[in-house]
Length: 306
Image 1 (cartoon, rainbow, N blue to C red):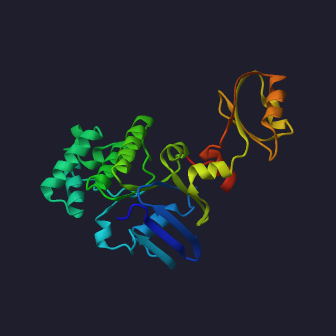
Image 2 (cartoon, helix red, strand yellow; image 1 turned 90 degrees about the horizontal axis):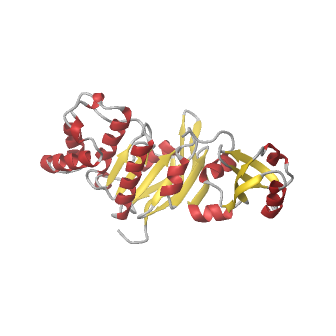
């Protein structure tokens, strides 16, 4: 693999189901070695895009290349995939199930068993290796599915809603393992509704809405370009008047603080002066917009599910 190539390229890809266009001329370049966030609301086309990259379904038109060529069995062996719908075998014992997954990826049975045992210990599932998969909680099953995706040390790891069903402690554990795989050279694509995780993990994102990329590129550059004069304010007092100030476009309330998006061209200092007249300000910070608020700003409607 070249150092600066693309791990995955989509060129004007389209896909329809029963007359509904799920993907509509999607073009993406996912650099080798990146952590790439595929973001969007339910039904935006994220899972369809992932399934086409994995060659589970074929596009109606356009081209997809993985490591420079169309997906084939040799590339699938270099790819780990955690699907949104769980692909586990409920009646199998956990270690046996993972051994099977490893042999599918061309590990020998002994290599697969050793790798599975090592990963089970790392993910705090060592005591469960002899249990049947159906005895695991949803979060434990998610961790087992992650092990199945990573145990053969793939060069490309595709994770569809990897944090689903996980509590914050296990979300952090998984986040650290994703970062570790990336430091070891693995390209990671993940689809998520958990915007704060995407914000912490991803250098590059594509925000998909109705099968099109409405934003695509480096997250830092997107934030700079969309810098909407966002301000975070912590205060004591009744801040209900803030939304009615002439320079304020929108107020997001978070309990201990508010995030305020100013109207184009507004001066944050005017907001500060208007606030201090009625409130005791503890913190006033001009900031780049959060990925959560970028999402809402770009696709409208509801915030993404957490």
